Amino acid sequence: MQPSSYRIVEIPVRHRARRRLHLEGTPPALYAVGDIHGCYDQMIEAEERIRKDAARRSGGQALVVYLGDYVDRGPQSAAVLEHLTKPHDDGLARIALCGNHDDTFLNFLRDPSGWMYWLGPNFGGAVTLESYGIDPEEALWRDGAGLMRAVPQAHQSFLATLPVFLHVGNYLFVHAGIRPAVALHDQEDEDLIWIREPFLTEGPGLPLIVVHGHTPCAEPELAPGRIGIDTGCFATGRLTVLRVDATGARFV
Image (cartoon, rainbow, N blue to C red):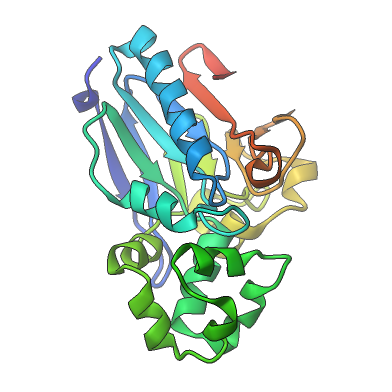
């Protein structure tokens, strides 16, 4: 089946909300990739797994959905964003969703003094700056304009325009999850990129299977109404890939 058998449309949203996407039709093969967190080598290896699997199933054509958190913690955030922003001719169509780390990195670039906690050990932003050749200590004294000049405009535009979910049939691909039992058009961006509870305990509360990252687990988590595929790549070296098709969902 060829890529022209489907199209991506934007769902109307309120002012200032990030884009929400809906897939009409059927992609040749669809794969979701968990949180990358600066792990460039593992991302390239995951894409190779996808290409090999898609070659057996759909002539090498595939739609890859990245679930967000491309930066922080791992050593090569700049290389990850460069890879995701440049054009490719490898049979893989790519949709990158927004994670909380991506959103916070952009906010830090725009207002360093207001988002200084991004540099702390819990968030892991310092290593992201280092991947751009920026000394984190020096960043404390730079103004926002100076920081933004050090990060390619293509990377900033990419971060600013990331959508927050992709709806495909009875699947929803999103970074963190959703507010249970709240209609998709009423979901808040903050929940879509930050939520844990009550989503992790209650599930979506809608007739959907939510494929998400954000909450790292030792193994992919299969729970009623949701599949969590953040396996903590920056700490474990394991980047999980999930294939979704008419027969269900399987790990690659």
